[in-house]
Image (cartoon, rainbow, N blue to C red; front, top):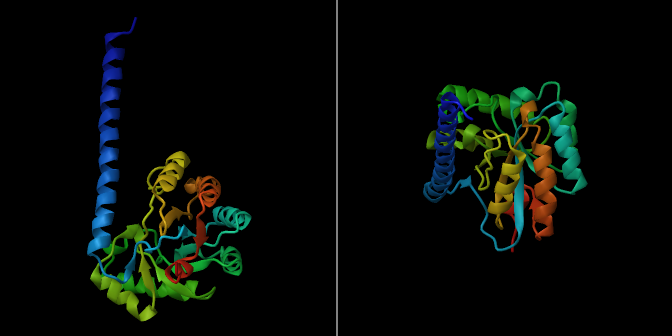
Amino acid sequence: MKSVKSTKFSRRFLLLWGISSLAAIGFFFKSRFFSRWLEQSTSDNVLFHVDTAEKVVALTIDDGPHDSLTAQILDILAQYKVQATFFIIGSNVSGNEAVLHRLVEEGHELGNHLMSDARSIGLTESEFEMQLSEAHSIISEFGDVKWFRPGSGWYNDRMLAQIRPYNYQTVIGSVYPFDAQIRSKEFASRYILSNTRPGSIIILHDGKAERHHTPSVLHKIIPTLQSRGFRFLTLSELVNYHS
């Protein structure tokens, strides 16, 4: 027979679980609604997806390189013959030069993700410029840098003006499985497979050991999407793709 204390604890747990679940559902709906609103109201210089009826998509990987995880990701991409665009954090490059050389040699693209894993919009104008310039200097040693993605996906007109001299195009994306917040390969895989459409730009993360589920997600989503007729392109290939 359950004690009164045990029953109260169970009820409290269920109540907290219910509140947490509702909050999570609200977060996802609000995030998706905000993303759509932002895409509709933002500058044409910011890329969210590409309008096409063809089953082509771009895979983007943020926050690398990492001393072991990036190599695992590259192995999987090579296995499935997929090229991706990697948004590099400049401070992560030191000690990982070999994996960056491999990344470029295997046909993947480079993007600038500043020097630190932080909300770019929270940086002052001078700090943003310093990080942008320093990261560009570091990353461009390995190949052309054509793309910029702000940390946490937040940006403003001032930031867009500051990147203009670098001839970058800013890209956010359209399929973000919250893998930096929710450490569940099952959730991330289901989210991507449920939301990917022709012209989608998929976002996943590298760069930290606790993001070890990214290879498992890739093993699930790449062959599944390929079996549905999708082809993976780099961002440059996607924006230049003609149906």
